[in-house]
Length: 92
Ligand code: SF4
Image 1 (spheres, rainbow, N blue to C red):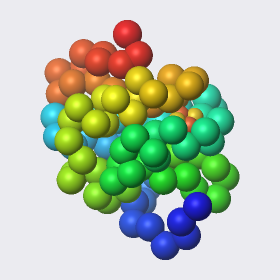
Image 2: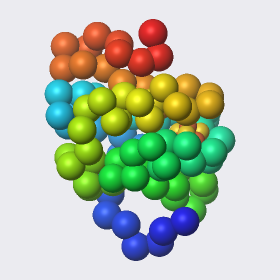
Image 3: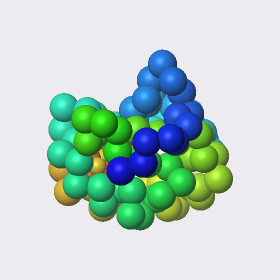
Image 4: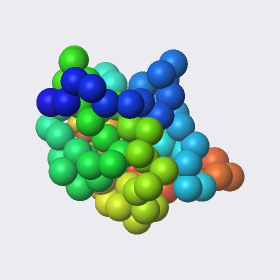
């Protein structure tokens, strides 16, 4: 676990954030800290001190497909993604 990371939004560590035409957030009640998302999208996610996924400032450097793949890889579907119009991309 990293300690000195920069969040994209200090007020909403787990989102929602809107970047790259995607609205992304983590359901902290669902997240079990499996860190699969960190492995798939290391510029987007890190685990905080409660072992919940939070969204990094560098999310802007991650490509859309990688972010969507990370949501699909989450074993408990805790990462929710919508497009800019509010249409659900994942989970369906
Ligand atoms: S993969 Fe899912 S459960 Fe694991 S840390 Fe990421 S959001 Fe949480």
